[in-house]
Length: 263
Image (cartoon, rainbow, N blue to C red; front, side):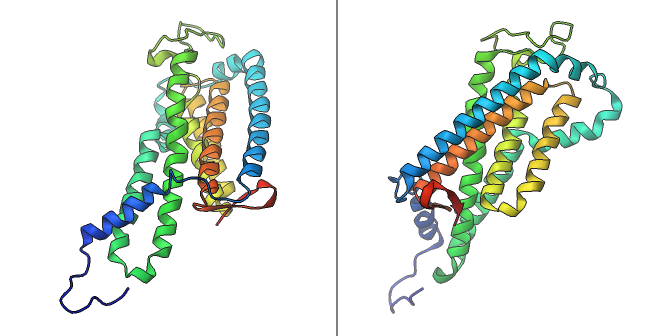
C-alpha cells in the first residue's frame, strides 16, 4: 500500500470495508467472462439430466419396494437411547450450517481492511470461496421449501400406519413436509460445495452427508426416498451455483471441454 502524502488522511476502516463489500457483491452479478462458459453450460446440462434421471428412478424404486420396510425396521420414535443421533442430526440443520458459513464470511470480510493492501489476496480468495459455500447451500434450501409444500408427502407413520404413498399436496403442515428432506438438501449441497473447493475433503464430506441422511431415517423424520430426493435437490443447487461462479471466474476456472476446476 502506498504511503499517504503529507497532509492527506489514509482511508478509514469503514471506507475500506465498503471498498471490499461493494465489489464483492457486484462481482456476483457481473456478466459471465469465462471463455469456455458455453461448453461448461452444455456439460452441466448433461450432468444434471443424467443425475436427475438416475435419482428419480431410484426414488420411485424405493417408494415401491423399500420405504415401508425401512421405516418399520427403525427404533420407535422418541426412544431415549437415540439422543446421540438427535444431537448429530442437528449438524445438518440448514439454519445452523448457514449460520456458521455466514459468520465465517463476515469475519473474513471484517478482517480484510485490517490487512496491508498487498497481503489481502488470500483473504479475498477465501472470502470468494465462502460466498460460494453459503450460496451453494442457501439456493437449494430456498428451492426445497416450496417443493415440500407442493408435494405434500407425509412423514413416516403420519396417518397412523406405514404408507409410502401418503401425499396431500399443498397441505402446508410440518407433518406433510417429508419430500425432500431439508437436512439431506443441506448436507449434500455442503458436501458437494466443500469438495468442489477443496477436493481432498470429498470423502469425509460425503460420509458426513450420508450419515446425516441416515440419521433422518433412524429418527423416523423421513422415508429413504425423501433423503434421496433431498440429496438430488442439494447437488443440483450446488452444481448450478458453481457454474454461476465459474462463468464469472470467481473461485473456479473453466477449462477446455467445459470442465470446472477450483482456481
